[in-house]
Image (cartoon, rainbow, N blue to C red; front, side, top):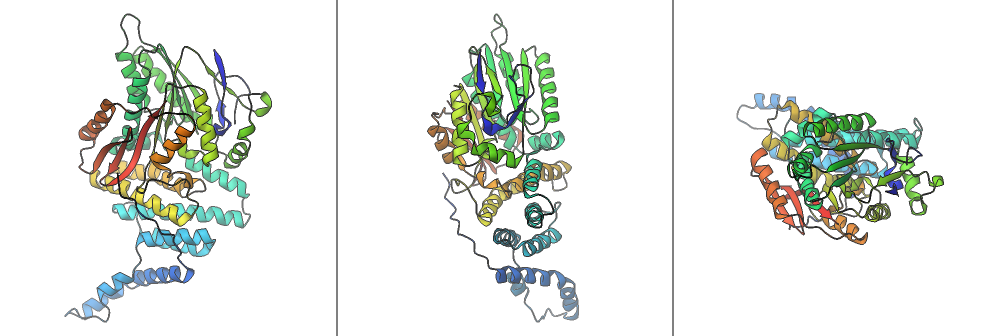
Length: 477
């Protein structure tokens, strides 16, 4: 048995008797982006134009009724050209926030919120959720500036809200109506299954366990391919997440499922702290952390006869800058896992190391989520209750987080994630041809639409909508 120190960046609180105290521890053509420089007068003109357009809609009807022959003092085309698009207003609002003009930023967001609807078409729904996210960020900045709430507490509360998982019903509905989660889980599972073949004891460290929907298919596959003479192997999952009750329920469901297929199974929940200020303090001292008790580090128990797989599905973007990411990956490498699976969002243009400029980040996020909302529009009825719940509880929270204080880390892209993994000593473990064909079969059987595409690139598997890459899955060793 080997006792391995947990990395401080994870801020994990350990709730299991086998963990040593203390109990917590903390391609595609690139899209060129121009730096936005919307001045205050430009934004005010946009807002004035839109307000005028809204207030004059009824009088336009009266003018039409009074001019039967169609004559009018204003051309419809001229009026339409003067009205800013929802995207224009989102980027203008982000620019105002970047420059600290909170009053004007809230006005821009308010115009969007009053004009858009979460129940209309894809463009309207997208605008609504971006306006809501920008309003939230403006409120946080205003509260901090006005000292209504301690700035550190505001940031921590915002980060916590963004990190909390969606309800299990919304999460499962997202799994049903869109392929993103199932694609990531299925492809990562196949990589893990290939890597642990023949192992008698398997340990999976899942760094974002959420509701655990990834694991029943893998447990089933492990049980079904077991040698009848030797019996099935023992599987242990260590699942990390931000909500203790969710993790406990996840563990109970997975244990019940494993019993139903007679698979020896253990689940260890690890609570991931969301306190932003605590995270920043820990990150600052990460390089000097040791395994002594004074470092406030708990320890993860590893067994030499276990085959370890580390699952990083939608996790790495939650880490900080390059130093934090490099430190974390070196910590994982020191555990000598048989495989590390990585799934992260993609964007046109190959990704960015970090986007501190809020207007640019809003533009990149809108490019990504416009494709996601368009995909739902094309494949799910507009009045779908499931679609509304998914957009509000899953995608809406993602957009909140993408425009939040730490959202600039989201858009690194496959090339940059891969470069960080290689710098930490990992080598790419190309996905098998079966994993890629299985992902394509998933789309044909469960999400029949010509818009969804699966491509293999640089040993990874990429899911996109039409010409836009949205999600990549890769594996490393």
